[in-house]
Image 1 (tube, rainbow over the protein chains, first blue to last red):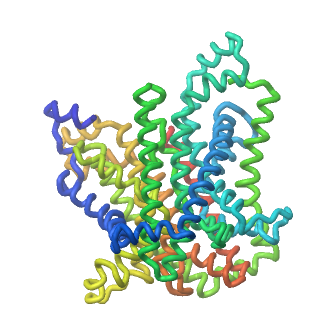
Image 2 (image 1 turned 90 degrees about the vertical axis):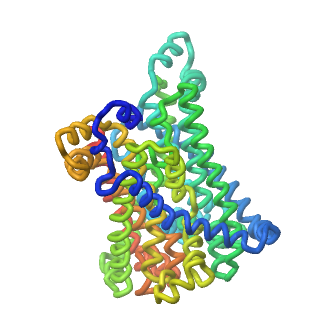
Length: 297
Length: 267
């Protein structure tokens, strides 16, 4: 938009150029780098997945263990984002509207799952909730472990998506509702929740995309047992047993699911802007929120 | 919302209890568990030849992947914000891909591209270049997973600062490089720094993608996260926890840096 207003005037364009190279060459280099690092490998993946025809692709995706792992991944991720949607909203509310000692520490520590390597998380979880659990709770190697590991890695998404919306929210509506006799819960249900919905939806979709692909944190803690094997662990196992086409086929399915999540996030963003629910900067795209979304492995 | 005291306390117990159980207890536990029998066992594990090699290799991947992705990130952000172009939305969408793709899938993609059946195999074999199961493959995996951060953190800052100062500089005769170094970069530095911190944290901790392409050979192609896994599988818990504590300390430093930069950005 800035560029648009500039080209119409006779302002010198010099300062706007990519230094060293012009816009054209600059764009070429950026696209080249992006292609070499990201797009070319993904093309190779899709090529391998489909290399033996659609029929073979379908067979690989629908073999019992592949289907089972896909189902576990989709269902566990859904449970996890619902739990984190609930607790994430509460945490965002506490961090914006409440005052308590240690609030800034809590606010900083929310990002821990983004910063802590996932394999470290997995190691801690298995020592904490495995056979040697100091609390006597043994969930390692069960489907519950998948859920707990995913809860850990996706916690920040909803908090960081809802927080900015709560900060910007106009308190007058709530006060008006309260003065008209609405109770705390009614105010939340009728006023606050609808206003948070775009952020909550985007945060949940981002968390879901992340949960679908999670590998490190599940690996040691939930393991590769038949009933705890998520798709990423299954793909790894297929690679190790030499079935690269099968691994690629399941990867393509996982890739499509993640892309749908991304598309959902951008739909939510457009919807929110069109209905004037929030300005576009407030709804997180993938880590474009400036609040540090999306790090971690 | 002016919640009544009862529901306010209920929300505090729920929210803070969740953070305590999910984040704080595990964080404290790792330090307790590592130093349970003193400083010596974890320290010995990290200073073992394999441990030191893993540390060195991790730092090498950071030293290559982070500067390259930073340069790309700044250039790409300038392109997306300052040069409106019809195809920009495609670049924008492609940049988000690494966030949405499973690390294992990223590893597999590189594995297929550079592996024995891969597209580049004949050319690479002829030139005698080894990418898989060696350092170049691991660096490529780290570059893939951490590509978006600098772009994503720089774009909003660039949008916010506008173009008046850049225009003023060029009206006064500054060339493109001078404008960039003296006007644009100082204005976006905290945003870029925030992106660099996220990139570094991601490269330091990357596990899934690297584990597929590296082969995880002790003393050769093992970064610290791979070292943690291997030590755990070999029932060497002090080794696994020693390396984990090192990574956890780096994660805490990351959080401090994020906090510091956020304040600078807001100020």
